Image (cartoon, rainbow, N blue to C red; front, top):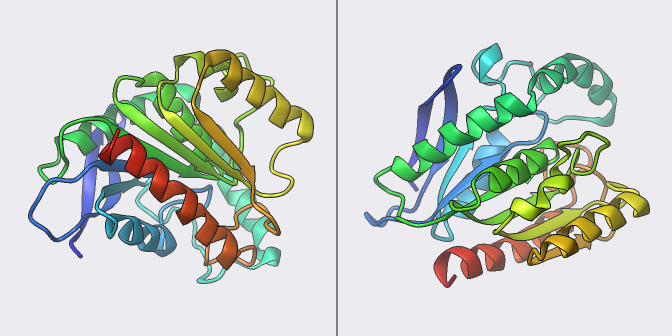
Amino acid sequence: MPTKNLQIPTADGRADAFAAFPDHGERHPGVLMYSDAFGLRPVLEEMARELAGHGYYVLVPHIYYRHGTAPVVDLPEHIADEDRPALFGLLMPLVEAHTTARILRDADAYLGFLTAQPEVSAGPVAVTGYCMGAALAMRTATAHPDRVAAVAGFHPGLLVTDAPDSPHRLAAKLTAQVHLGLAEGDLTPEALDELHQALDTAGVGYTTEIYPDTVHGFTMSDTAVFSPSGLQRHWDRLLPLLDRALTHG
């Protein structure tokens, strides 16, 4: 399968990125994939290749590019529970610096770059994200309702906050079909009710599901919280969503 290491021009510099796409010599629907807080690394590249094998051009940007090329933090090959406090001590300043304004500037650049690739077919794209990437995916979809036909988030973080521009408060701008696959405990019952109310009021076509026997981060095979059944359920929900929205939508 063809893959590329790319540089995406943005308003604030150049973001390194990984892309995978089918080896058919044809054009394919585009998918923008946002990483979790640990950032672009081999497991995300593996997931991009898996998704590309189903007929999509998948672009995974390095969300922390302003701080250097990936990885900006040295990650162990396998992220154990005891590794997390020190890693998040290094990563949280990067997460906090990734403001909504930066997210939206980057989304403009990423979508423009994705849709301009010669291997990407005309028409809308999908956006998917993991952990904090789910909030980035939702912000991208609400900022570009004419370009994003599907959005999916898994073990999401920062979807329902007290901020005036919390992603759930922007649901009225969504035109995309939505799936959110949650780990047990990702959202409180009250926050999940608030999210459902916002999506219902906006008339969004969506599904949410708490994946059984999972904890936050369950899709990531390079971590101690990985759940093979959770990852498979993620594919079982994501692939039909993309098929409906991008192939037969």
